[in-house]
Length: 124
Image 1 (cartoon, rainbow, N blue to C red):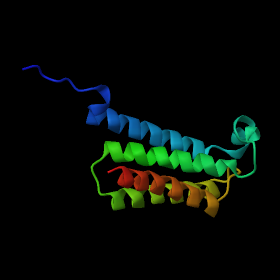
Image 2: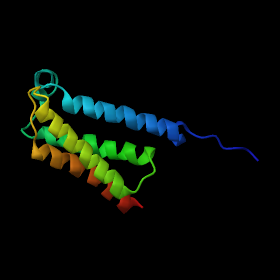
Image 3: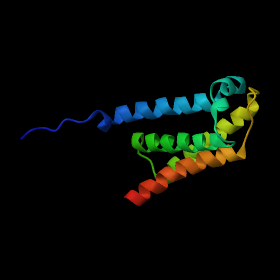
Image 4: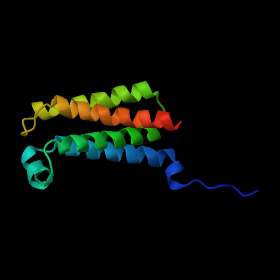
């Protein structure tokens, strides 16, 4: 009988690396000083509020990588993701890098994470 080899994504270690890398990317982009952000990113938005779509997508994929990487209950993962969103907003306010706490950004973060878990539950 032939042994089946694992694909690269089936490795728990690989999925953890992806999660931690993506988490670092999310933290980097959400905490980037506003002058750097405006010059490189936000000037290209097509409509006002498009950054909320970015927040939803960032946290949707953060929830995906988190779900794939670590064995925890969905409720625990949701709480952690909400806390990450809250912490990034608080840090934006406290670091004085030209960014500020925005409830709509936090709402978009939560919506992104909840959307992933909702779609996962529907597909199950």
